[in-house]
Length: 363
Image (cartoon, rainbow, N blue to C red; front, side, top):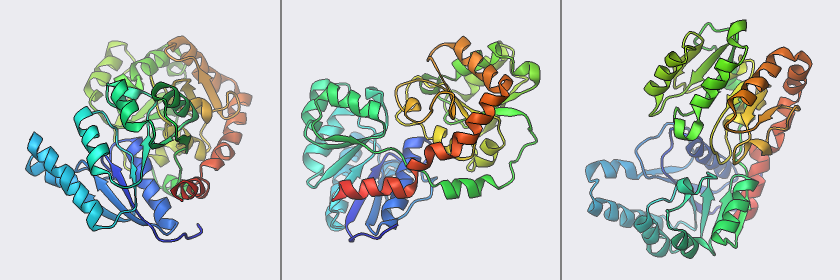
């Protein structure tokens, strides 16, 4: 990457672990550091799993000492002092902003410098407070970056935002492929894969399991590998037993390096009720693995081109999902065509290309 003039930037995150939004923020620190910016990261929670660049200020450790309302307010002012002490010039706020009182204080009293707010989700309940009037009041004239075109359009209309644009999540394809060459710690040889958080309200995994049961995959001894953990893990394991597919669904837990498992799968699946820009789709495609995904809001149809690098199906329709999985297995020409186009279909999401867009907006 071409180095730029040094500027002090603080990326504010809920944490650096657990989900795609957090992972994309960690990767953004690598991009901006590579461009020559002086990067600081403030994490609200004490969870640091992903590789990052820059100086980390872990507010989560302070939270453990005092989680009362007074402790929360005190942390806001500690945060403000940190910004001032380190001469931060721009904040990139990548958190979810759902607590009304906190966001009022942060927006009106803590941030006294330019801020770019990143919207990682199409679902407004995960991005803003439940008060539409307050969101409009706080953010109408603020600089916003959405991670999909559909999310940009949605928030522009819903909250009358005047200064919003789309910058997709970026991907370190070289590192993904390097990590994919490591050995997977299982002996599965014929499987499809879901990798992500085990949160059924968001990821709608029961729909995926219903579709798998309706499909012909188990009859051909093609298993479903599930990588990840989350609040609904036990319930989802029970559900596979209830619908009698537990013999074919393998729960493998969270894998710090999921890429060998993805690379060796037949195709990847996604059944979410909503997304922002699902990182699982480009990561699979980057490894030459086609994707079968529901056409949820938002993101999948901005990456998956139907019958070109994967299949898009109507959301909340288990039979349609099952039919798409069957097609991927039974139509060899379709499968090979999607596999051949997978890698090239996501080249526009490289670190270099997305870095140029961030450099332009940071000017």
